[in-house]
Image 1 (cartoon, rainbow, N blue to C red):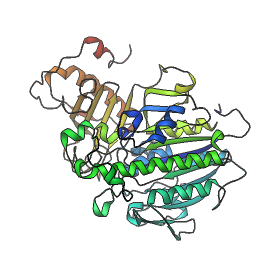
Image 2 (cartoon, helix red, strand yellow):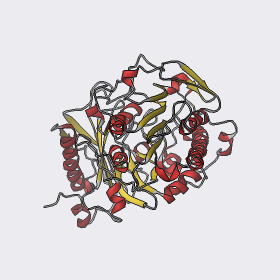
Image 3 (cartoon, rainbow, N blue to C red):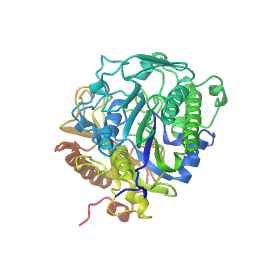
Length: 467
């Protein structure tokens, strides 16, 4: 069923950021005024208020979004693994409906010896190509190098966010090979607000970092520190410039007469915990690493309001296809979120949990329900070598109703043994359904009682399977 009433299906634009926390946005309560364009966009369209990545690492998350499969199924369970060219990608499905498909920005799914230029067979079948495999290594804040369809370097002027946004606007305007006579699917992939690897810093545009010195910090960062005091002002400056670029892309769609016929998705690959949860920025089960901003507008999404159901990155590929009137293949492991909007109320069939695979820093798995966070890891396994494990041990349990910023770990707390047992079975069910494996999860070693109130029986009933 197409979300678009006319004879021509809608265009689709994805505005994809890198390492952006959900609570950088005003609509999620950030008081710093970073995202007025996103906030208006989400209020006008459909705000996926509880959106999560299914893999808090760049390459794996991108493989999930391009294929609709979890990272263990794409084979890209960590960075620097090549996406199998034989796997169907979003362009394969859009091409079948007559779309032109364009990719601009960071790719991160080509062979590791290709830092910049990407060979045609590793581009996921996008028609138009202006990208870099590992953009953070071929560019800096004011030096942007992408590579065209002939693998030639293209130097783009301006701050890096603006350079990519300008390239996207040129494509939308029909220049640089952009379409004029058929619908298009444009994937615009930024590196911001990711840190700049070679200097471990967040290079905001000139003058922007200074605006946010002493700005509001989320309570988890205020409590745990990490590198937030040093890096948050630059990070906020990058988010601000992204939002300005987002506004310019929306303005371009409007001025070109495309706004009413274009579905736009804004989201990110994962969040950022500023070295508060492990030795780097992501790769953990915490909200700071897995929760992302997400909103859609355009045909089928305008006036959709705030969707409270838990939505995973794995649900976005079938959602985009559904919006274009393209049937998602059964192999995709997520489901379209459009029925949540069309129905006008919660869909009782929609899962009340999201499943997260974690790699590199550990071999981990996590479950996020509306109230609970439950995470396990495999002792002694190298997360850069093993995609999965036969044995996991409970590592984290958080009651998000009482502990929104995950400062009190209840794993091993005797008062929460029954909660942990129920969540353990649900997580094992996710692993079985997604990966086809039957691992063992061992309870955490007992810890001292925290004094936290034991959940009422009704709360435990929410975790039990029906019947």
